Amino acid sequence: MELVLHTFGTCLTKDNDAFMVLHKDGKQRIPPGDVKSIVVHRGVQLSSDALLLAIANEIEVLFLEQGGKPAGRVWSNKYGSISTIRKGQLAFSRSKEAVRWITGMIASKIENQQALLWTFAASQPELNKDVEKTSLRLENYRKKVSGMQGEMVSDIAAQLRGWEGITSKIYFEQMNAFLPERYRFEQCSQHPAMDVVNAMLNYGYGMLYGKIEGSLIHAGIDPYIGILHRDEYNRPVLVYDVIEKYRIWTDYVVFRLTMQNIIGEEYYSVKDDGSCWLEGLGRRVIIQSMNDYLAEVIPIGGVERSRMTHIDLFTQNLAQKFKK
Image (tube, rainbow, N blue to C red):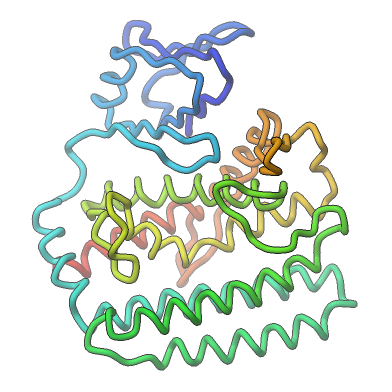
């Protein structure tokens, strides 16, 4: 299981050979064999003994910022064949094969966006004509992306970023139409979000960033050597490349929650500058919903696994690609 510690004042300590979670409602003893990862929010205290117990059992400890984005992590130094894979990874990032890889990732993202639009259109058939037009526009850009050629990613990077930005704008304009009127937003906003939907999206993306980064590290891949995203100092840029394939999983969870009209004012707060932040209840709902969705078993490429396991399989295959 994933142990999520998000309530202010919670403390994680060690009790003999187990974790002990102390909070205002009592305490809970958890054997390390039951824990796959530990996620820590602000206002939570951890003892060094608890951290060492996690390291000894190769349990990743991920620290999140207020908006849900990873701030840092503690992990065992036993993950992956790092030196061999990193050498191949660096060579790959400068190759023509990297062009095919990143255009395939962005094309897959666009294809997933089209599929999600039609999934939601099934419950709102009055929007079918609009969705069809949007899907055709997206398909036009998907074909353009798929057909891009270059010796290195730098040859196509500017054009690819431009088309990616356009398709995201087209996609979210249509997704917005599925929402109840009171949840609709004028534009996507990040750091900070200016509405509750974007606050939930940002938090969900942050969770996904953390899981993908952890999966890359477990596979022995350096998340700081990117393909398309290469020039952002001190950031895990490869995570930004890989997440494109999986963003719609967060989109589905957030838009489904919002379309069900269950997001109340107690889920979030609006600050004096107009920015929107999730409160404890809002964070709990998105955390539980995301984890449940990622745990659901689905078939991809003829293989039935949980969504999270599919991410792990993808990064493992990517590591093998780098080693060739």
